Length: 148
View 1 (tube, helix red, strand yellow):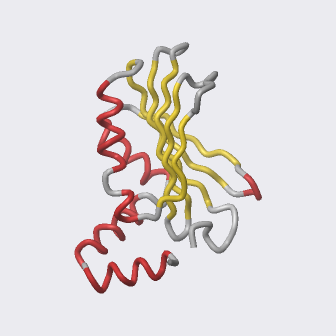
View 2: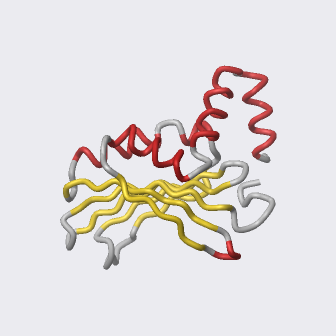
């Protein structure tokens, strides 16, 4: 089912729910928006940047740093991703697998919005004695959106 059809169904069936998803999509469509969303649920200072990705598109990302394998980092991840599956189709979920070099562990969930790909990841880095929670917004590499 296309994203537009999903939104149409949500709008007809549950207007308040659809409005909440529209508000979340609006908040997460800029680097400042992902920064504010990440900061509200982690209460941490963030590092943010923009990078080039395939096909000349951009990726905006921010991450919060926690003590290595901190329970607070996992709690923040759970809070951050709570509304994503209800509002955005899941594109992919992946982990580091059996062989892990850098980072020590890695968990990522990717979601699609109508214009962007949204990624939430959790990275343990023993060398840095940190756990990082990333929120990344990528311009979709191809049109139409890869989840349609």
